[in-house]
Length: 273
Image (cartoon, rainbow, N blue to C red; front, side, top):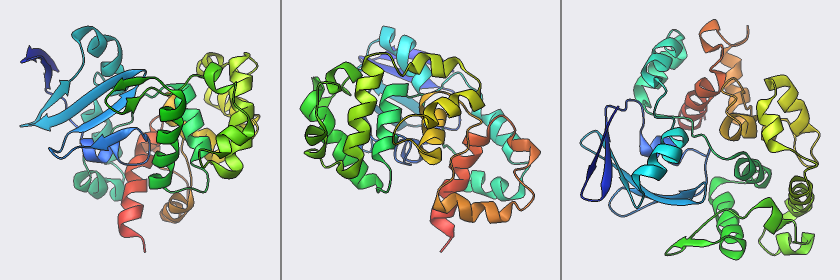
């Protein structure tokens, strides 16, 4: 990976396996909006960013070198060798053709709090509506960072809300889950950093003890917000995919099951009737 500053933008070359459409609009994160020029604008970690790909280079706009180094490199996992990971996954016959067709899906390292809230909201919901609810939440209780783009509100801020306040955002039956979750994170009863330090099984057990968090939400949060790359979320699409693996997941998935899952999920949505 080579990094240089050009015309107030940060230009990154040499990053393989990062397709912005497949990564930012695949259902793992809900704060990115595609712009007319093909770039994406969004907020993560309290920072606004516009990013685009041009002639194989990643162009980071509206950020500083300091923030790029301290936050965006980790968020986009730019130091991880995804080419090696994809070559390993391609030992599986189904993934071999899938990776060739959809090359460039990458797991984002999101903040645990935002990821957990987002996937609580995602229950029995579609991506368009999830984005709408989260946008309302951020607009109402976050801080504006850049022309209509808002930070994700803290647990402390949301802990002051009632169930009715959450319902007013369109969260439906999930309002009671979010109200209790916010209060318990804010007061320290739920320690997200501690959960991040546990083993996968222990972390999953902790998340499943949270009101309103089931196995799918727990595994999504673990994969997308707590950096457990071996977490393997299963929804209706993945249940159909598992029919192709009657003997369980292949050995080449070990330790990176979550990355394999993203490719399989995308394949299923585009190929299974």
